[in-house]
Structures are given as structure tokens and as C-alpha cells.
Length: 402
Image (spheres, rainbow, N blue to C red):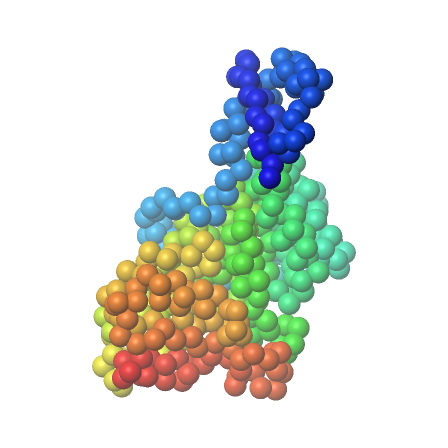
């Protein structure tokens, strides 16, 4: 068995700590002790301040409680726009406000394949809006380097299906940068934007939702909004975040989702969900495009069955608003979570598990998931793969009749 030998000294706001593990039969020699004492005596002040302050710097902001915000600011002096217009407005506002914000990716300087970055090259120049090679790993690595040097890079991965070559950079590097450097460096301000989800004809490589892969990684904020006003406020919050963020944009909503959006700069709190409709019989939780599918199912359940549904738009997947969801389930006694991603290992399982642990005695029916199937995304059968409004409606009916 080993014993711990410790000697510490505090000099000039500096803490020096020496640790030795040694076996009882081999105590430290006098020469070792002299070397240790000499090293402690010659210790210099740390340029990074007291160790406790350094420890605070290493803490991720991912799980901190968001500050309350008056969300009516989303629609203040609103200009009617769609999801794409809100993304473009957010990038425009951010680049005008902070010269350290830059955007890049495949075809980004040309406006992007969906035109989300239109006219930003003309307005801010090629040093802050530029194209990259078709190399997702390089795009993410470049963003990490820029963020570490104080820039606020907003990198675009053209489709979420293509993000996997960048997975190592995001998961193994960006998420750990603050922790591995003891708080000396971080990737705050780094945002990876990526269109995701199905549009009806994308097939294997243009229809996937991949948010749960990143939800598993500590140190990364994962966001998927469902409305233009939320998209703008949350994207600007990601750019301000001290943590690297992955921002998924449901491309099916790009031109369909429309509402009045504040044209000025504003942020919405990361980690805070939103109650879309209040209800008393069953709680439904979703994010991204699935919120709109669930809203239709809720309205149908109300009209045909007289069921009162409470629909929650999670908005931020990590950190997720567990307090909001659990408070709703304690009221309704039932939970349904729905997302496009396949059911096994999806983030819906995490929500159901957390609710089962904390709200067990309040449940009147088992938590239910309505998700994609455990199969690669099928081209000709997309509408059967997706968790449609009839599937959500059936889950609502079954939960109430359990």
C-alpha cells in the first residue's frame, strides 16, 4: 500500500504543492527531501492567480442556470420574416456589433446553399466572410484555433449529415479546451451552424438529425430552435456563450416558419424552454421542426377527444430545461417526447429517464417516445419513417387512456 507525502507552501499569492507516493519500506531519501524543500523555496507566483480562481475558470457554463429574460423582446418592432431571414439577421447583427465575429464554410461567401449568409460578404468583406474547402474537419479545426485566439467564428457545416468528419475536432478538442488548459484558453464564441432534418426527399445523406451525438458530450451547448424569433435570439446567445455551441437549423422550416422578428440585436437564454400551449392532461416535449408536428396533434386531440395538452419547446437540448418539464409532468401526470432522430439512444430517452426518476409518484402512464425508426434514413419511405402527426396523436390518446 502506498502512502501520500505532501508538503505545501504559500508564498506571494502562490501555492506550491508537492505530492509523492511511496511504499512504507521505501521512505523518501534526505536528498529527495532537500530537493523538495529547495523547489518550494524557489517557487514563483503563478501568472494565472490563485488556484481556486483557476478552478472557477475551468467550469463550463453549460449547466449554469440561465438569467431570466423578458422574451417579448423577440417580437419588439417586429419585421415579418422566415427562419432563413432570422438567421441572416442574427449574423448581420453580430458582425455589425463585434468585429471579431466572422463566418465561413462551404459556399458561405456565395450566400450558402440555402442563402442564409446572403450579402454578408458584400457588407463585411472577404476577411470576415469567406469560403472553405470541402473539409469539415478543417472547418471545425480552423474555428477552434480562431476561438482560442479571441475571435468569434461562426462556421457552417453545409448539412448535419456531413458533420461527422468534424466530430473529432468538436468532441475531442473544442469541448475540452477550457478543461485541458486549466482555464487559460477556451472556445467560447465558437458556433457550428448546420441545417438538419428531413424535407421529404433527402435520403441517407441529407435528412438526418444528429443532435443526440453532441448532447452526450460535456462542454458543448446543443441548440435546435423551432421558430424564426427563437432562432435569432438563440444564435446570438450562442455567439456570446463562453462554451462552444452546435446550432442545428431544421431546414424544413427555413421558408415555411414565418413570424414577426425583432430586427435589432437581442439574445434568449440558453437552457430555457418555452411553453407553446398550456394544458392539464398530458405534457408533450419536442424541439426543432417536430414542435410544429406536435402542435397539430395537440390541436387534433383537443378537437376530437377534449384532451388538454401542454406543449413544451425545449429549444436548447443541452442544457435542457429539466425544471420546466418536470413541473409540467407533475401537473399532467403524463409525458410524450418526440424527435426525428431514431428512437434508440435519442435524447428523448434521457428526458424520459430523468422524469421517471424525479416524478415517478406523479405519473399516471409510462413516459412515451415518438421518434424515427432504428434504420438508416430511407429515401422513398421518409414519410413513414418520420414521427408524424397521426403517430403523436395516437400516443396522446394511449397515454390518457392508459
